[in-house]
Length: 340
Image (tube, rainbow, N blue to C red; front, side):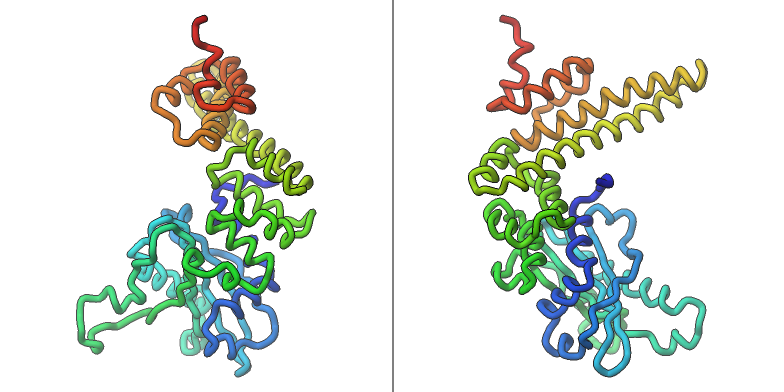
């Protein structure tokens, strides 16, 4: 399994990168006046993204080329806003992304500049706070005179997943399961999600991985819930994913440690520096993994506990990692270090 830096982006792309699911998404979420102009052919997923690098951790995007019944083409640009609180600058960002799409489409050809295809912007939001962003860039311009409001984009179509009824999320069962997961409600709809995502599919694994990476979930409780519900395959898959995430945490720490070790080791030789980095990297990776597992089970760590982990020797971190599996609370993990 490839390492995933942004679980929101990964699940969003997994849901919509399939042409069949993308077509169902457009049918479910575009206004009838627009959806009625789409040809029967599934959309073509256009590679590449347009989100600013600084916003890549909180936004995801997908560009689709769609055929119209008129015989021409259009683009549908789907921008997913992953922040729990909506960003009031989004219309401005969206306008800049649309301009980038047109620029890339036109290239250096003047003929294309005279016949730019329509771009249908769709914003997908699943944050907890109500949507308070202006409906269009026009609403952000300080003038009541329409002759002064020159706009690169008049507005966008908002699909607020949190505000929708479950059945309205999609007629496509897999899409609905994915959107429920993005809404942070997967644990309440485990049976539906398990039935909607067939065993052995990539999307089934990606949805479960999203839950393990993003939800504040008690791993033992989740295993028990899956077992009680007869979801044995999901329980086994959960163990595999958790083990992989643990290995990835150690690998990230190893890479960081090697880099620092090489930098500090220039004076005494690259070989020694690399060796020092490997040792430090493994320790850092285990400390990072321990912190992540503790937060998943018991919530945000107190400062003294975080400092204690950062200063601990590798063998002590190993013991705490073992204790996380069965400890009923945070104090129990570190109880073995207290004087008797």
